[in-house]
Image (cartoon, rainbow, N blue to C red):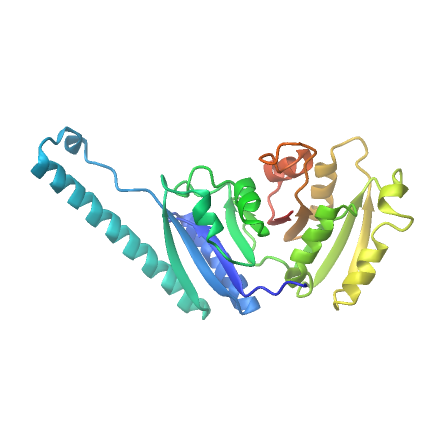
Length: 281
């Protein structure tokens, strides 16, 4: 079934980076007429130094009451800010809070959405173990990672697809169809396809281009050589050459451990890329 985004979730916090990611997610929800779910990471209010010496029931109750009120005030302020962004972009939305020390897989499994938007690296106040790998592994939902260094205004005008005919790459293309069909340019990139015709086929990428054309997406093919460098480096160099604002890649690993989802190429891309990446598995 070809995806249509109706529910987009964004993971953010109260930082300036969180605001930026929230606005990118809101712009996507507006563009695709989707509902936006804000997952807001928040750390409990810290104790004042003198409060750590509180003793006795009355004193402890006073400390707990103050921190509870402080937490409630933070939550209300965050909810109002998210509501303001949603109103600015004219989208429907809902707001959920996850405390920094309470994030677990149960919260992720309760999330039903078509796309996850998250910052890379993750905001500090999100749950410690909620890395991009964990989000993707637990939810099975494609994840759009927006690097901290990304300063572009839009995401998905020029889409580069890292293509090797693998199952993971096919799934990533399918999950990225809403991006691909609304992009101004789509480029299918293969790396070192000439020495490996059995894997890439006689005409690398041609069948994918024909498939995308039936979705009214007119893609071109770029066959590049790593020339002794890494595959991830070759992909990023071509993405920069194409002035891409989105890289689509399937998460793939040779590891037998299911907890290790990202292979070497994916991890290198995460470490080096300065442009948004849609990762699927």
